[in-house]
Length: 225
Image (cartoon, rainbow, N blue to C red; front, side, top):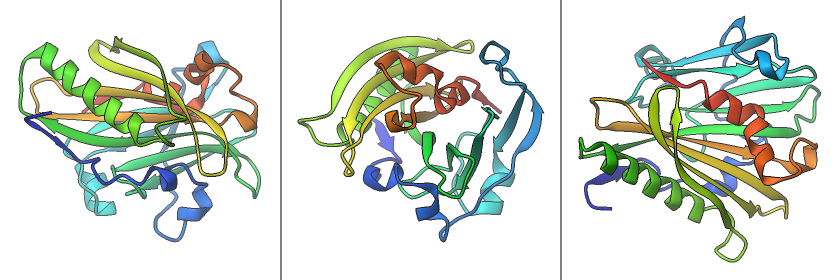
């Protein structure tokens, strides 16, 4: 799309959805601040807050063109592993895994950034939709990647573009993905949350279950700084 610069052009998605241990040598388990939860409806009492801003950028050597924060639900028997400057791009990736040495993945959330050259609200949504579709195309192969939902939503009080699909990874797992593109008001910058659910871990049985994964719930709390 003319006028859109993507920071996601070189994302390597086969690596993006690998286990956190595979990336441990590159970067960093980050600790967020533990606080009361916005997830009462899910029966989750605590959450971990991650703030991705100028201080985060300086500490981890990563670009943060649009500062934001989010809350990650702390579920029983689940571990949160957050990685700065992850493989595939963007400032942060958060894994929600089993609470043992295997760290089998329940879900993961990677956030990447994009820029645009339009102030028109509808065109900004169209740019976000385009970015999400292009990301979905890079998952799996064209033969096994499916688009299930494509719509405009409101996240907090901001309009956003949402894509839900499924694909098969290189290990043969059938995975679900929710991509939400959100633009910061009065800015040329936006973010895309890529929430991936792993059915073999038991939390995903149908398409709509993606919304109840920890990764998807976490992105729903995003707010710009």
